[in-house]
Amino acid sequence: MIELKDISRYFSGVAAVRELNLTIDKGEFCVLVGTSGCGKSTTLRMINRLIEHSAGEIHIDGQPIRSFREEVLRRRIGYVIQSIGLFPHWTVARNIALVPRLLGWEPERIAARVDELMALLGMSHSRFADKYPRQLSGGQAQRVGVARALAADPDILLMDEPFGALDPLTRDGLQDELLALHSRLNKTFVFVTHDMDEALRLADRLVVMHEGRIRQQGRPIDLLREPADEFVESLLGGSDRGLKEAALTPVSARMRRESTPSSAPAIDADASLRDALSLMLWHRADALKVVEGKGSAKMLGTLSLTDVVAARAPTASGEEARP
Amino acid sequence: MSRLRGLVVPLTWLVLLLGGCLAMEALEPLFRWIEPDSRSVIYQRADFLTLLGKHLLVVSAAALLSVAIGIGAAVAVTRRWGQDFLPLVAQLAAIGQTFPPVAVLALAVPVLGFGTLPVIVALLLYGLLPIVRNTLAGLEGVSAEVREAARGMGMTQRQLLMHVEMPLAASVIVAGIRTSVTINIATAAIGATMGASNLGDPIISGIVNGNTAHVLQGAVLIALLALFVDSLFAWLQPESASIGAASA
Image (cartoon, rainbow over all chains, first blue to last red):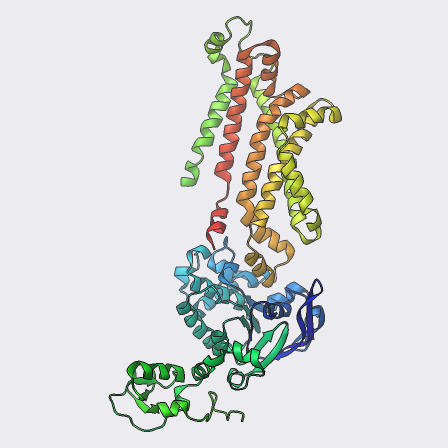
Protein backbone atom coordinates (compact mmCIF):
# COMPACT_ATOMS: atom_id res chain seq x y z
CA MET A 1 0.00 0.00 0.00
CA ILE A 2 1.26 3.45 -0.90
CA GLU A 3 0.05 6.43 1.11
CA LEU A 4 0.75 10.04 0.20
CA LYS A 5 -0.22 12.35 3.04
CA ASP A 6 -0.44 16.11 2.50
CA ILE A 7 2.36 15.95 -0.05
CA SER A 8 3.67 19.18 -1.52
CA ARG A 9 6.59 19.82 -3.78
CA TYR A 10 7.97 23.25 -4.55
CA PHE A 11 10.38 24.05 -7.35
CA SER A 12 12.08 27.36 -6.48
CA GLY A 13 9.08 28.52 -4.54
CA VAL A 14 6.45 27.43 -7.05
CA ALA A 15 4.27 24.52 -6.04
CA ALA A 16 4.26 21.68 -8.58
CA VAL A 17 2.20 19.50 -6.28
CA ARG A 18 0.24 20.82 -3.33
CA GLU A 19 -1.28 19.12 -0.33
CA LEU A 20 -1.96 15.96 -2.20
CA ASN A 21 -3.55 13.00 -0.45
CA LEU A 22 -3.69 9.66 -2.18
CA THR A 23 -3.88 6.06 -1.01
CA ILE A 24 -3.11 3.30 -3.46
CA ASP A 25 -4.08 -0.15 -2.26
CA LYS A 26 -1.95 -3.21 -2.75
CA GLY A 27 -2.57 -4.81 -6.13
CA GLU A 28 -4.33 -1.77 -7.51
CA PHE A 29 -3.74 -0.35 -10.98
CA CYS A 30 -3.66 3.37 -10.33
CA VAL A 31 -3.41 5.79 -13.24
CA LEU A 32 -2.50 9.45 -12.76
CA VAL A 33 -3.81 11.49 -15.64
CA GLY A 34 -3.82 15.17 -16.49
CA THR A 35 -2.49 17.79 -18.85
CA SER A 36 1.25 18.42 -19.01
CA GLY A 37 2.57 20.28 -16.00
CA CYS A 38 -0.21 19.07 -13.73
CA GLY A 39 2.25 17.39 -11.37
CA LYS A 40 1.45 13.78 -12.22
CA SER A 41 5.01 12.86 -13.13
CA THR A 42 6.37 14.73 -10.12
CA THR A 43 3.98 12.78 -7.90
CA LEU A 44 5.12 9.48 -9.36
CA ARG A 45 8.78 10.32 -8.99
CA MET A 46 8.33 11.34 -5.40
CA ILE A 47 7.32 7.76 -4.62
CA ASN A 48 10.81 6.42 -5.46
CA ARG A 49 12.50 9.63 -4.33
CA LEU A 50 13.82 10.65 -7.71
CA ILE A 51 12.23 13.88 -6.56
CA GLU A 52 12.12 14.60 -2.85
CA HIS A 53 8.84 15.82 -1.42
CA SER A 54 8.99 19.25 0.21
CA ALA A 55 6.26 18.65 2.77
CA GLY A 56 4.07 15.81 3.96
CA GLU A 57 4.82 12.13 4.26
CA ILE A 58 4.90 9.18 1.90
CA HIS A 59 4.55 5.69 3.35
CA ILE A 60 4.99 2.36 1.64
CA ASP A 61 3.43 -0.52 3.57
CA GLY A 62 3.28 1.73 6.61
CA GLN A 63 6.95 2.73 6.54
CA PRO A 64 8.00 6.29 5.66
CA ILE A 65 10.08 6.17 2.49
CA ARG A 66 12.72 8.41 4.02
CA SER A 67 13.58 5.66 6.48
CA PHE A 68 15.31 3.82 3.60
CA ARG A 69 18.44 4.79 1.76
CA GLU A 70 17.42 6.11 -1.69
CA GLU A 71 19.12 3.31 -3.60
CA VAL A 72 17.69 0.62 -1.37
CA LEU A 73 14.20 2.03 -1.81
CA ARG A 74 14.54 2.23 -5.59
CA ARG A 75 15.77 -1.33 -5.92
CA ARG A 76 12.54 -2.42 -4.24
CA ILE A 77 10.38 -0.45 -6.67
CA GLY A 78 10.17 -1.16 -10.39
CA TYR A 79 10.46 1.88 -12.62
CA VAL A 80 9.66 2.14 -16.32
CA ILE A 81 10.21 5.15 -18.55
CA GLN A 82 10.15 5.52 -22.31
CA SER A 83 12.31 3.05 -24.22
CA ILE A 84 15.37 5.28 -24.43
CA GLY A 85 15.94 4.59 -20.74
CA LEU A 86 17.63 1.32 -21.68
CA PHE A 87 21.41 1.37 -21.43
CA PRO A 88 22.62 1.51 -25.04
CA HIS A 89 25.94 -0.17 -24.26
CA TRP A 90 24.39 -3.22 -22.63
CA THR A 91 22.64 -6.17 -24.22
CA VAL A 92 18.99 -6.90 -23.56
CA ALA A 93 19.86 -9.63 -21.05
CA ARG A 94 22.25 -7.39 -19.16
CA ASN A 95 19.76 -4.53 -19.12
CA ILE A 96 17.14 -6.82 -17.59
CA ALA A 97 19.65 -8.12 -15.06
CA LEU A 98 20.50 -4.64 -13.79
CA VAL A 99 18.69 -4.58 -10.45
CA PRO A 100 19.45 -8.22 -9.52
CA ARG A 101 23.11 -7.45 -10.14
CA LEU A 102 22.91 -4.35 -7.96
CA LEU A 103 21.36 -6.55 -5.28
CA GLY A 104 24.25 -8.99 -5.62
CA TRP A 105 22.32 -12.07 -6.74
CA GLU A 106 24.20 -15.20 -7.77
CA PRO A 107 24.90 -15.31 -11.54
CA GLU A 108 22.86 -18.52 -11.99
CA ARG A 109 19.87 -16.99 -10.25
CA ILE A 110 20.15 -13.86 -12.39
CA ALA A 111 20.35 -15.88 -15.59
CA ALA A 112 17.30 -17.93 -14.59
CA ARG A 113 15.37 -14.77 -13.73
CA VAL A 114 16.24 -13.14 -17.06
CA ASP A 115 14.99 -16.22 -18.92
CA GLU A 116 11.80 -16.22 -16.88
CA LEU A 117 11.10 -12.54 -17.55
CA MET A 118 11.80 -12.74 -21.24
CA ALA A 119 9.38 -15.64 -21.44
CA LEU A 120 6.82 -13.69 -19.39
CA LEU A 121 7.00 -10.80 -21.85
CA GLY A 122 6.93 -13.06 -24.87
CA MET A 123 10.47 -12.38 -26.07
CA SER A 124 12.44 -15.30 -27.39
CA HIS A 125 15.66 -15.64 -25.42
CA SER A 126 17.73 -16.85 -28.34
CA ARG A 127 16.57 -14.02 -30.57
CA PHE A 128 16.78 -11.08 -28.19
CA ALA A 129 19.08 -11.78 -25.24
CA ASP A 130 22.25 -10.65 -26.98
CA LYS A 131 20.79 -7.77 -28.94
CA TYR A 132 21.52 -4.14 -28.16
CA PRO A 133 18.70 -1.68 -27.55
CA ARG A 134 19.29 0.08 -30.88
CA GLN A 135 18.47 -3.18 -32.65
CA LEU A 136 14.99 -3.35 -31.11
CA SER A 137 11.71 -1.86 -32.27
CA GLY A 138 9.95 0.59 -29.97
CA GLY A 139 7.57 -2.06 -28.68
CA GLN A 140 10.33 -4.58 -28.05
CA ALA A 141 12.43 -2.00 -26.24
CA GLN A 142 9.47 -1.16 -24.04
CA ARG A 143 8.96 -4.83 -23.19
CA VAL A 144 12.59 -4.97 -22.12
CA GLY A 145 11.96 -1.87 -20.02
CA VAL A 146 9.07 -3.59 -18.25
CA ALA A 147 11.11 -6.78 -17.80
CA ARG A 148 13.96 -4.77 -16.31
CA ALA A 149 11.58 -3.11 -13.87
CA LEU A 150 10.14 -6.48 -12.81
CA ALA A 151 13.52 -8.19 -12.52
CA ALA A 152 13.94 -8.13 -8.76
CA ASP A 153 10.26 -8.97 -8.24
CA PRO A 154 9.24 -5.62 -6.71
CA ASP A 155 5.81 -5.18 -5.13
CA ILE A 156 5.34 -1.83 -6.81
CA LEU A 157 5.83 -0.83 -10.43
CA LEU A 158 6.00 2.86 -11.34
CA MET A 159 5.48 3.72 -14.99
CA ASP A 160 6.01 7.19 -16.42
CA GLU A 161 4.28 7.46 -19.81
CA PRO A 162 5.92 4.22 -20.91
CA PHE A 163 3.97 3.95 -24.15
CA GLY A 164 4.12 7.62 -25.08
CA ALA A 165 6.47 7.19 -28.02
CA LEU A 166 4.86 4.11 -29.55
CA ASP A 167 2.55 3.82 -32.54
CA PRO A 168 -1.13 3.21 -31.69
CA LEU A 169 -1.13 -0.44 -32.76
CA THR A 170 1.91 -1.38 -30.67
CA ARG A 171 0.52 0.64 -27.79
CA ASP A 172 -2.81 -1.20 -27.88
CA GLY A 173 -1.00 -4.52 -27.79
CA LEU A 174 1.22 -3.51 -24.90
CA GLN A 175 -1.76 -2.16 -22.95
CA ASP A 176 -3.42 -5.56 -23.25
CA GLU A 177 -0.25 -7.27 -22.14
CA LEU A 178 0.14 -4.91 -19.22
CA LEU A 179 -3.41 -5.61 -18.06
CA ALA A 180 -2.78 -9.34 -18.33
CA LEU A 181 0.48 -8.94 -16.44
CA HIS A 182 -1.24 -6.95 -13.73
CA SER A 183 -3.97 -9.48 -13.12
CA ARG A 184 -1.40 -12.25 -13.09
CA LEU A 185 1.25 -10.71 -10.83
CA ASN A 186 -0.82 -9.06 -8.13
CA LYS A 187 1.51 -6.08 -7.91
CA THR A 188 0.67 -2.44 -7.36
CA PHE A 189 0.99 -0.48 -10.60
CA VAL A 190 1.19 3.30 -10.63
CA PHE A 191 1.00 4.64 -14.17
CA VAL A 192 1.26 8.17 -15.50
CA THR A 193 -0.19 9.20 -18.84
CA HIS A 194 -1.80 12.16 -20.55
CA ASP A 195 -3.76 9.89 -22.87
CA MET A 196 -7.26 9.62 -21.45
CA ASP A 197 -8.21 6.55 -23.50
CA GLU A 198 -5.16 4.75 -22.16
CA ALA A 199 -5.99 5.86 -18.62
CA LEU A 200 -9.63 4.74 -18.81
CA ARG A 201 -8.63 1.43 -20.25
CA LEU A 202 -5.97 0.54 -17.71
CA ALA A 203 -7.08 2.05 -14.44
CA ASP A 204 -8.71 0.44 -11.43
CA ARG A 205 -8.34 3.81 -9.79
CA LEU A 206 -8.22 6.88 -11.97
CA VAL A 207 -6.70 10.01 -10.47
CA VAL A 208 -7.30 13.23 -12.40
CA MET A 209 -4.78 15.92 -11.58
CA HIS A 210 -4.73 19.60 -12.42
CA GLU A 211 -2.36 22.33 -11.28
CA GLY A 212 -0.73 20.14 -8.67
CA ARG A 213 -3.94 18.96 -7.05
CA ILE A 214 -6.17 15.95 -7.37
CA ARG A 215 -9.43 17.07 -8.95
CA GLN A 216 -11.14 13.71 -8.71
CA GLN A 217 -10.34 10.06 -8.18
CA GLY A 218 -12.25 6.85 -8.36
CA ARG A 219 -13.24 4.08 -10.75
CA PRO A 220 -13.07 5.21 -14.38
CA ILE A 221 -16.74 4.49 -14.94
CA ASP A 222 -17.73 6.61 -11.93
CA LEU A 223 -15.62 9.53 -13.11
CA LEU A 224 -17.18 9.29 -16.55
CA ARG A 225 -20.69 9.28 -15.17
CA GLU A 226 -20.21 11.88 -12.51
CA PRO A 227 -17.31 14.19 -13.20
CA ALA A 228 -16.70 16.48 -10.24
CA ASP A 229 -16.38 19.64 -12.29
CA GLU A 230 -16.12 21.03 -15.79
CA PHE A 231 -12.40 20.46 -16.00
CA VAL A 232 -12.68 16.75 -15.30
CA GLU A 233 -15.61 16.54 -17.68
CA SER A 234 -13.70 18.18 -20.53
CA LEU A 235 -10.58 16.12 -19.84
CA LEU A 236 -12.68 12.98 -19.93
CA GLY A 237 -13.74 13.90 -23.42
CA GLY A 238 -16.71 16.26 -23.10
CA SER A 239 -19.29 15.17 -25.67
CA ASP A 240 -17.18 12.09 -26.39
CA ARG A 241 -17.88 10.73 -22.92
CA GLY A 242 -20.74 8.55 -24.09
CA LEU A 243 -18.42 6.63 -26.37
CA LYS A 244 -15.73 6.41 -23.71
CA GLU A 245 -18.23 4.96 -21.29
CA ALA A 246 -19.36 2.51 -23.93
CA ALA A 247 -15.73 1.53 -24.36
CA LEU A 248 -15.62 0.50 -20.70
CA THR A 249 -18.79 -1.58 -20.76
CA PRO A 250 -18.61 -5.12 -22.15
CA VAL A 251 -21.24 -6.40 -24.52
CA SER A 252 -22.06 -9.18 -22.06
CA ALA A 253 -23.44 -6.61 -19.61
CA ARG A 254 -26.19 -5.50 -21.97
CA MET A 255 -27.05 -8.46 -24.17
CA ARG A 256 -30.27 -10.38 -23.91
CA ARG A 257 -30.28 -14.15 -24.00
CA GLU A 258 -32.41 -14.37 -27.11
CA SER A 259 -31.63 -15.74 -30.47
CA THR A 260 -30.99 -13.49 -33.41
CA PRO A 261 -31.53 -13.86 -37.12
CA SER A 262 -28.38 -15.53 -38.34
CA SER A 263 -27.80 -12.78 -40.88
CA ALA A 264 -26.85 -10.36 -38.09
CA PRO A 265 -23.13 -9.52 -37.71
CA ALA A 266 -21.41 -11.32 -34.83
CA ILE A 267 -19.61 -9.74 -31.92
CA ASP A 268 -17.49 -11.17 -29.13
CA ALA A 269 -19.18 -11.05 -25.70
CA ASP A 270 -16.01 -9.53 -24.21
CA ALA A 271 -15.90 -6.70 -26.74
CA SER A 272 -17.01 -3.27 -25.61
CA LEU A 273 -20.26 -1.54 -26.36
CA ARG A 274 -18.23 0.95 -28.37
CA ASP A 275 -17.04 -1.82 -30.66
CA ALA A 276 -20.63 -3.04 -30.91
CA LEU A 277 -21.88 0.41 -31.83
CA SER A 278 -19.20 0.78 -34.44
CA LEU A 279 -20.11 -2.59 -35.92
CA MET A 280 -23.78 -1.60 -36.08
CA LEU A 281 -22.92 1.66 -37.81
CA TRP A 282 -20.68 -0.09 -40.26
CA HIS A 283 -23.11 -2.87 -41.16
CA ARG A 284 -26.18 -0.61 -40.92
CA ALA A 285 -27.61 -3.21 -38.55
CA ASP A 286 -29.67 -2.53 -35.43
CA ALA A 287 -28.96 -5.90 -33.82
CA LEU A 288 -25.88 -8.02 -33.33
CA LYS A 289 -25.36 -11.68 -32.65
CA VAL A 290 -23.28 -12.11 -29.48
CA VAL A 291 -20.85 -15.02 -29.64
CA GLU A 292 -18.42 -16.51 -27.20
CA GLY A 293 -14.89 -15.51 -28.13
CA LYS A 294 -13.53 -14.22 -31.38
CA GLY A 295 -14.50 -16.21 -34.46
CA SER A 296 -16.55 -18.61 -32.38
CA ALA A 297 -19.89 -19.81 -33.63
CA LYS A 298 -21.43 -20.40 -30.23
CA MET A 299 -24.23 -17.88 -29.88
CA LEU A 300 -24.84 -16.40 -26.44
CA GLY A 301 -27.57 -13.85 -27.16
CA THR A 302 -28.56 -10.67 -28.90
CA LEU A 303 -27.57 -7.07 -28.58
CA SER A 304 -29.83 -4.50 -30.16
CA LEU A 305 -29.37 -0.77 -30.53
CA THR A 306 -31.98 -0.27 -27.82
CA ASP A 307 -29.96 -2.46 -25.48
CA VAL A 308 -26.88 -0.38 -26.10
CA VAL A 309 -28.55 2.91 -25.30
CA ALA A 310 -30.74 1.43 -22.56
CA ALA A 311 -30.82 2.85 -19.05
CA ARG A 312 -27.70 2.08 -17.09
CA ALA A 313 -28.16 -1.24 -15.51
CA PRO A 314 -25.27 -3.23 -14.05
CA THR A 315 -21.86 -1.69 -14.79
CA ALA A 316 -18.72 -3.25 -16.10
CA SER A 317 -17.85 -5.02 -12.91
CA GLY A 318 -21.41 -6.13 -12.37
CA GLU A 319 -22.13 -3.75 -9.51
CA GLU A 320 -25.00 -1.31 -9.45
CA ALA A 321 -24.07 2.11 -10.70
CA ARG A 322 -24.36 4.93 -8.24
CA PRO A 323 -27.57 6.90 -8.62
CA MET B 1 40.71 -11.08 -36.92
CA SER B 2 39.61 -7.73 -38.32
CA ARG B 3 40.56 -6.18 -34.99
CA LEU B 4 44.15 -7.35 -35.47
CA ARG B 5 44.14 -6.19 -39.07
CA GLY B 6 43.63 -2.66 -37.73
CA LEU B 7 47.14 -2.90 -36.29
CA VAL B 8 48.72 -2.90 -39.74
CA VAL B 9 48.79 0.90 -40.02
CA PRO B 10 50.29 1.62 -36.57
CA LEU B 11 52.86 -1.14 -37.07
CA THR B 12 53.90 0.31 -40.41
CA TRP B 13 54.55 3.71 -38.81
CA LEU B 14 56.41 2.02 -35.95
CA VAL B 15 58.71 0.16 -38.31
CA LEU B 16 59.45 3.37 -40.24
CA LEU B 17 60.08 5.22 -36.97
CA LEU B 18 62.50 2.63 -35.56
CA GLY B 19 64.14 2.22 -38.93
CA GLY B 20 64.67 5.98 -39.07
CA CYS B 21 66.22 5.99 -35.61
CA LEU B 22 68.55 3.06 -36.19
CA ALA B 23 69.55 3.52 -39.81
CA MET B 24 69.56 7.24 -40.46
CA GLU B 25 73.12 6.85 -41.78
CA ALA B 26 71.79 4.90 -44.71
CA LEU B 27 70.14 8.09 -45.94
CA GLU B 28 73.41 10.03 -45.83
CA PRO B 29 73.61 10.54 -49.64
CA LEU B 30 70.15 12.12 -49.58
CA PHE B 31 71.05 14.51 -46.76
CA ARG B 32 74.43 15.21 -48.34
CA TRP B 33 72.54 16.34 -51.44
CA ILE B 34 70.40 18.68 -49.32
CA GLU B 35 73.27 20.02 -47.26
CA PRO B 36 76.40 19.63 -49.46
CA ASP B 37 78.60 22.11 -47.52
CA SER B 38 78.14 20.89 -43.95
CA ARG B 39 80.70 18.91 -42.05
CA SER B 40 78.15 16.51 -40.57
CA VAL B 41 74.93 15.72 -42.35
CA ILE B 42 73.64 13.17 -39.86
CA TYR B 43 72.94 14.43 -36.34
CA GLN B 44 75.62 12.86 -34.16
CA ARG B 45 75.49 14.57 -30.78
CA ALA B 46 73.16 11.94 -29.42
CA ASP B 47 71.77 8.62 -30.52
CA PHE B 48 68.33 8.95 -32.17
CA LEU B 49 66.94 6.04 -30.18
CA THR B 50 67.90 7.72 -26.89
CA LEU B 51 66.28 10.95 -28.04
CA LEU B 52 63.15 9.03 -29.00
CA GLY B 53 63.09 7.39 -25.57
CA LYS B 54 63.40 10.73 -23.81
CA HIS B 55 60.76 12.24 -26.07
CA LEU B 56 58.36 9.42 -25.27
CA LEU B 57 59.11 9.64 -21.58
CA VAL B 58 58.33 13.35 -21.38
CA VAL B 59 55.18 13.03 -23.47
CA SER B 60 53.85 10.01 -21.59
CA ALA B 61 54.58 11.49 -18.18
CA ALA B 62 52.71 14.64 -19.21
CA ALA B 63 49.90 12.59 -20.81
CA LEU B 64 49.37 10.39 -17.75
CA LEU B 65 49.17 13.42 -15.50
CA SER B 66 46.87 15.36 -17.79
CA VAL B 67 44.60 12.35 -18.25
CA ALA B 68 44.31 11.91 -14.49
CA ILE B 69 43.82 15.60 -13.78
CA GLY B 70 41.68 16.35 -16.86
CA ILE B 71 39.25 13.46 -16.45
CA GLY B 72 39.20 14.02 -12.69
CA ALA B 73 38.33 17.69 -13.09
CA ALA B 74 35.68 17.06 -15.72
CA VAL B 75 34.07 14.33 -13.63
CA ALA B 76 34.17 16.52 -10.54
CA VAL B 77 32.42 19.46 -12.13
CA THR B 78 29.67 17.26 -13.56
CA ARG B 79 28.83 15.86 -10.09
CA ARG B 80 26.18 17.63 -8.10
CA TRP B 81 28.68 18.92 -5.52
CA GLY B 82 31.04 20.36 -8.13
CA GLN B 83 28.45 21.82 -10.48
CA ASP B 84 29.23 25.40 -9.46
CA PHE B 85 32.66 25.09 -11.05
CA LEU B 86 31.42 23.71 -14.36
CA PRO B 87 31.21 27.06 -16.18
CA LEU B 88 34.65 28.04 -14.90
CA VAL B 89 36.35 24.82 -15.97
CA ALA B 90 34.55 24.71 -19.32
CA GLN B 91 35.60 28.29 -20.00
CA LEU B 92 39.21 27.67 -19.00
CA ALA B 93 39.32 24.68 -21.31
CA ALA B 94 37.93 26.76 -24.17
CA ILE B 95 40.29 29.68 -23.62
CA GLY B 96 43.27 27.38 -23.19
CA GLN B 97 42.67 25.90 -26.62
CA THR B 98 43.23 29.29 -28.22
CA PHE B 99 46.76 29.50 -26.75
CA PRO B 100 49.52 28.48 -29.18
CA PRO B 101 51.64 25.71 -27.62
CA VAL B 102 54.80 27.76 -28.11
CA ALA B 103 53.34 30.48 -25.93
CA VAL B 104 52.59 27.97 -23.18
CA LEU B 105 56.20 26.83 -23.17
CA ALA B 106 57.55 30.37 -23.35
CA LEU B 107 55.45 31.30 -20.35
CA ALA B 108 56.61 28.22 -18.43
CA VAL B 109 60.30 29.15 -18.57
CA PRO B 110 60.25 32.26 -16.37
CA VAL B 111 58.11 30.43 -13.84
CA LEU B 112 59.75 27.02 -13.81
CA GLY B 113 63.22 27.55 -15.22
CA PHE B 114 64.97 25.15 -17.62
CA GLY B 115 65.06 21.36 -17.72
CA THR B 116 62.75 18.40 -18.18
CA LEU B 117 60.33 19.22 -15.37
CA PRO B 118 59.09 22.54 -16.79
CA VAL B 119 58.55 20.87 -20.16
CA ILE B 120 56.44 18.17 -18.53
CA VAL B 121 54.45 20.79 -16.65
CA ALA B 122 53.93 22.88 -19.77
CA LEU B 123 52.86 19.85 -21.81
CA LEU B 124 50.58 18.76 -19.01
CA LEU B 125 48.84 22.13 -18.95
CA TYR B 126 48.47 22.30 -22.68
CA GLY B 127 47.39 18.67 -22.93
CA LEU B 128 44.72 19.10 -20.27
CA LEU B 129 42.45 21.13 -22.43
CA PRO B 130 41.31 18.64 -25.09
CA ILE B 131 40.87 16.02 -22.40
CA VAL B 132 38.73 18.22 -20.16
CA ARG B 133 36.68 19.44 -23.09
CA ASN B 134 36.06 15.96 -24.49
CA THR B 135 35.31 14.41 -21.11
CA LEU B 136 32.75 17.13 -20.46
CA ALA B 137 31.23 16.62 -23.89
CA GLY B 138 31.18 12.85 -23.44
CA LEU B 139 29.55 12.97 -20.03
CA GLU B 140 27.02 15.57 -21.13
CA GLY B 141 26.23 13.40 -24.15
CA VAL B 142 24.78 10.65 -21.94
CA SER B 143 21.05 11.08 -22.36
CA ALA B 144 18.94 12.31 -19.48
CA GLU B 145 16.66 9.26 -19.85
CA VAL B 146 19.54 6.85 -19.35
CA ARG B 147 20.67 8.75 -16.27
CA GLU B 148 17.13 8.87 -14.93
CA ALA B 149 16.67 5.15 -15.51
CA ALA B 150 19.97 4.38 -13.79
CA ARG B 151 18.97 6.40 -10.75
CA GLY B 152 15.45 5.04 -10.80
CA MET B 153 16.76 1.46 -10.80
CA GLY B 154 18.74 2.21 -7.65
CA MET B 155 22.28 2.79 -8.92
CA THR B 156 24.46 4.84 -6.62
CA GLN B 157 26.16 7.94 -8.04
CA ARG B 158 29.38 5.96 -8.21
CA GLN B 159 27.79 3.05 -10.06
CA LEU B 160 26.13 5.50 -12.44
CA LEU B 161 29.52 7.03 -13.20
CA MET B 162 31.52 3.81 -13.53
CA HIS B 163 29.00 1.57 -15.28
CA VAL B 164 26.99 3.99 -17.37
CA GLU B 165 28.47 7.44 -17.86
CA MET B 166 32.14 6.52 -18.36
CA PRO B 167 31.55 3.59 -20.75
CA LEU B 168 29.16 5.70 -22.83
CA ALA B 169 31.55 8.65 -22.87
CA ALA B 170 34.65 6.48 -23.41
CA SER B 171 35.11 6.95 -27.12
CA VAL B 172 34.78 10.73 -26.92
CA ILE B 173 37.23 10.81 -24.01
CA VAL B 174 39.75 8.64 -25.86
CA ALA B 175 39.43 10.99 -28.84
CA GLY B 176 40.35 13.85 -26.51
CA ILE B 177 43.38 11.98 -25.17
CA ARG B 178 44.40 11.22 -28.74
CA THR B 179 44.32 14.89 -29.72
CA SER B 180 46.15 15.87 -26.57
CA VAL B 181 48.94 13.34 -26.96
CA THR B 182 49.41 13.96 -30.68
CA ILE B 183 49.70 17.70 -30.19
CA ASN B 184 52.10 17.20 -27.32
CA ILE B 185 54.40 14.96 -29.32
CA ALA B 186 54.93 17.93 -31.62
CA THR B 187 54.97 20.50 -28.86
CA ALA B 188 57.57 18.58 -26.85
CA ALA B 189 60.10 19.33 -29.62
CA ILE B 190 60.01 22.98 -28.63
CA GLY B 191 60.99 21.76 -25.18
CA ALA B 192 64.47 21.23 -26.58
CA THR B 193 64.96 25.01 -26.39
CA MET B 194 64.35 24.74 -22.68
CA GLY B 195 67.07 22.24 -21.99
CA ALA B 196 65.03 19.06 -22.22
CA SER B 197 66.86 16.76 -24.56
CA ASN B 198 64.56 14.96 -27.02
CA LEU B 199 63.80 14.62 -30.74
CA GLY B 200 63.55 18.41 -30.84
CA ASP B 201 67.34 18.64 -30.32
CA PRO B 202 68.33 18.05 -33.96
CA ILE B 203 65.74 20.59 -35.08
CA ILE B 204 66.88 23.30 -32.69
CA SER B 205 70.57 22.69 -33.30
CA GLY B 206 69.87 22.52 -37.04
CA ILE B 207 68.19 25.90 -36.93
CA VAL B 208 70.95 27.41 -34.83
CA ASN B 209 73.73 26.05 -37.06
CA GLY B 210 71.87 26.48 -40.30
CA ASN B 211 71.86 22.75 -41.00
CA THR B 212 68.66 21.80 -42.82
CA ALA B 213 69.54 18.10 -42.80
CA HIS B 214 69.45 18.01 -39.00
CA VAL B 215 66.16 19.89 -38.92
CA LEU B 216 64.69 17.40 -41.38
CA GLN B 217 65.86 14.38 -39.41
CA GLY B 218 64.27 15.60 -36.20
CA ALA B 219 61.08 16.66 -37.95
CA VAL B 220 60.63 13.40 -39.84
CA LEU B 221 61.13 11.30 -36.72
CA ILE B 222 58.68 13.42 -34.72
CA ALA B 223 56.14 13.18 -37.52
CA LEU B 224 56.53 9.40 -37.66
CA LEU B 225 56.13 9.16 -33.88
CA ALA B 226 52.99 11.30 -34.02
CA LEU B 227 51.56 9.20 -36.84
CA PHE B 228 52.33 5.98 -34.98
CA VAL B 229 50.71 7.12 -31.74
CA ASP B 230 47.73 8.65 -33.53
CA SER B 231 47.01 5.48 -35.51
CA LEU B 232 47.45 3.42 -32.34
CA PHE B 233 44.73 5.50 -30.68
CA ALA B 234 42.52 5.15 -33.74
CA TRP B 235 42.82 1.40 -33.28
CA LEU B 236 42.21 1.60 -29.52
CA GLN B 237 39.19 3.90 -29.66
CA PRO B 238 36.16 1.96 -28.39
CA GLU B 239 33.13 1.73 -30.59
CA SER B 240 30.59 2.19 -27.81
CA ALA B 241 29.82 5.71 -28.99
CA SER B 242 28.26 4.44 -32.17
CA ILE B 243 26.00 2.27 -30.04
CA GLY B 244 25.09 5.26 -27.89
CA ALA B 245 24.52 7.56 -30.82
CA ALA B 246 22.35 5.16 -32.77
CA SER B 247 20.01 4.31 -29.94
CA ALA B 248 17.37 7.00 -30.08
